[in-house]
Length: 95
View 1: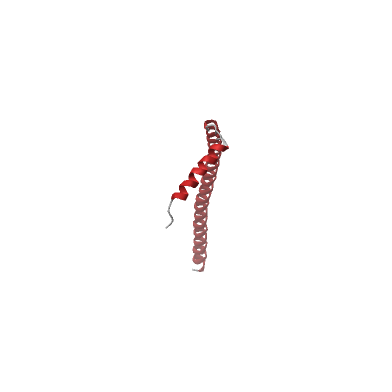
View 2 (view 1 turned 120 degrees about the vertical axis):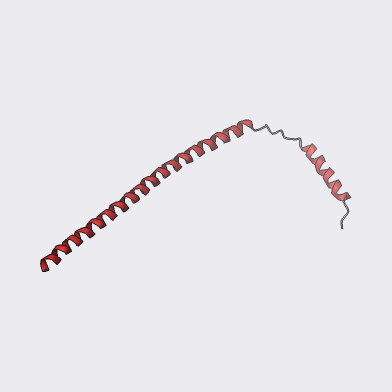
């Protein structure tokens, strides 16, 4: 009877070891899979960032090429506009 309990303990010990090994392998599989997916996502995000930088540079070049030329007004015209605005302000009644 003593020999049976030793054999049964060996079988239980072996079974527990196999179950722990299987659980460990399953956990390793999912961790490894998540790690590889994360690496792929990081690569895709870096590629998107690079493309966005290129698009931004292209948009800046397009905007600079399409900018209208700024014509500066003569200072005398600007002074006349200021005088007209000052006159208008003087005409407004204060409350």
